[in-house]
Image (cartoon, rainbow, N blue to C red):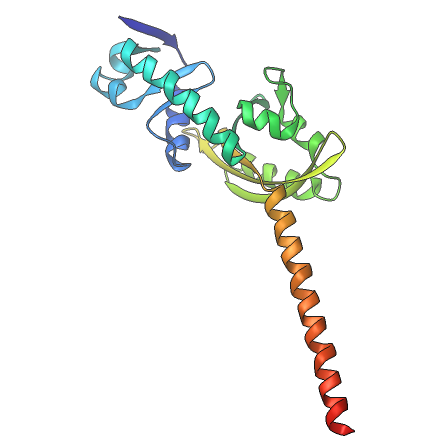
Length: 212
């Protein structure tokens, strides 16, 4: 028994390469697409099956289990993934990525959706990062976003796939909510500064005692 899904050849291959660069397993459920590169190779690639990818039922069930595990893992780690079609500007986000950015899951999104969530002081570097994406360059970026009136910190990472002419085609990335980590770092910094101030005060006291 097989499950049939039609995907664009170029997009399929591009996604596979980007997923590999980001460290994802070769069997991946992304949105409504199920990919298995090992099986794809065994059936002879596009030369044999054209634009149709066949998946066996057992693998489809395994993917559903993997999807459930991935959702739980992303929720625990506060890490989501997103996919940008650079040619159209259309953006797709995983459930956890939508939660982080405050997007309505399933609502139409574009690259502009990212910019609208950016903190005013960070939007310039975010636009600069995506300008590099359009030139085919990956990026890693830490910046702030505004969600429901709250300021959150995120780590964003992106990989880009080029077409045969060297033009940026698709971009796949991850986003992690590091707000709690930033708060902890700030607390540690404040504690360190407090200790340093205490040491200075104690040093002055000792020097004054010696002088007396």
